[in-house]
Length: 136
Image (cartoon, rainbow, N blue to C red; front, top):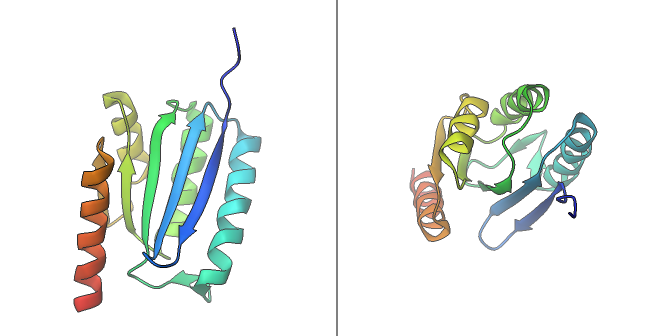
């Protein structure tokens, strides 16, 4: 039996001002550290003094991400809290009830957050949130 791949994909769409984070597999702390470094490297050129423009949206796709061990989930939660000050506008896509529970627990500090299973609905929500921010 082949071992499931673990990792992440990070893509910034400058036209839509949308950062898409796709996470997959079961992580360990080394994978999380590499992810943190990749996120920081991606955010640096699109932020000012470590803060993103409020209309930049995040889509975090967890549909292929396993429910994580406690140490990884706790570290992810701390990471989300650290980055939340920079931009709390995010959509989480997940495929299971247990994953939804973990995602909500990890992202409790996010002010504007929603959890979806459907990508089209997720994109509609984040686009509407971005429009609200731009018109304010």
